[in-house]
Length: 207
Ligand code: 5GP
Image (cartoon, rainbow, N blue to C red):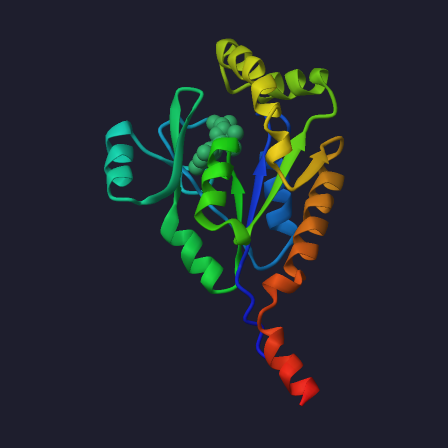
């Protein structure tokens, strides 16, 4: 029997500094048949980041051009910079039975849900407390103090969106949180509604 399951969209959101980017990387290291959706952004590149790996770093003119060509399935202004998710990449992978992982904010999650609700599984990552949130933002050490303060200030309004998500993971420990996300992914892959190909088997088994 051929596995014809369609891929799913696994969306991870959190207030910035909750460790979601590290969790995404861990999930990709540990799990097969899942790829990261790489967003386009007008935000300046951080020293540790690589173009085409963490993001595609582009200027506003190019962003507007892609936007008007319907290149993005969703885009948003986050902390004064634009971020957009390319559409073709998602469609191609889902059709090939490959899951796609997203590190996007609540605005993006809402728009992806409008795009294809049945294919989406959303997880909100929470920091265990305020102290660890501030420490993680500072430790990143690549953003200015002004940016850190702004992001900390925004965290509370971002957290208010937790209720819109399917699952909650409290990130006390990176390894444990990544494992929890993988558990969610594996269970979601097995959902009856995602295994339409089983119809053929059932027909065979019951004739
Ligand atoms: P950062 O600048 O720290 O990499 O990301 C800032 C915020 O933008 C994070 O919450 C991240 O999840 C979100 N983000 C990254 N890419 C996208 C995207 O393509 N769309 C949306 N809506 N948010 C994004």
